[in-house]
Image (cartoon, rainbow, N blue to C red):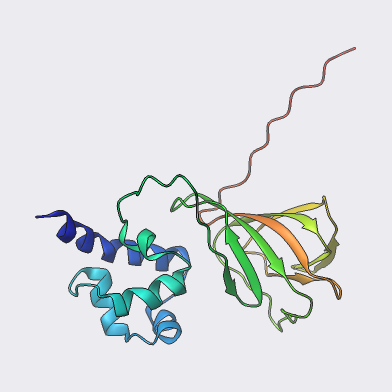
Length: 194
C-alpha cells in the first residue's frame, strides 16, 4: 500500500472523529454540506474514496483545512494556521488542535447575534468561560448572570445553559470545554504561615 492509499484510507476515521467531536449527526452534516447521508456514511466507513468535491464542503463544515482533513505531510512551515468558524451567531477560533480531551476556543459574539432561546441547551461535558472584553450574559439553570472582563464561570453542561452579548457591544471570551466531563484543575502555591 503506497502513501496515497494510506492517506485516503485514513480520511474516513478522521471524518467520523470530527463529526462526533462536533456532536453532529449524519443528517445534520448532510443538510450543512449538501452531501447525501448515504455518501457521508460510506466516506466515514471507507467504502467510498474521498474526492475534492466531497472534501471541500466537509472541511468547511468541520472548520479545518484540507491538509488537516487528509493529514497531509508537514511542509516544514512552523506557523499555525488557525481558522475561525462561525456557528450559531458566534465566531469561534480553536486554540487547540488535538482530538479528545479539553478543547480551548476564543469566542466573539456580536450584539444581538444570539437571541435568547426559549429552551437553553444541554449536552455532555463541562465548560469553563473567561471574559476578555465586553459583557457576557450567561443563563445557567435558574441563574441569569452577567460576567465582565476578568470574571470566569464553570459549569456542567448537563445544566441548561445559554450565553450571548449582554448589551449592544460585542463580547470576547475564552472557553475550555471537555466532552467527557473533564474539569480545569488549578494549582496554587500554598500560603506561607506567619
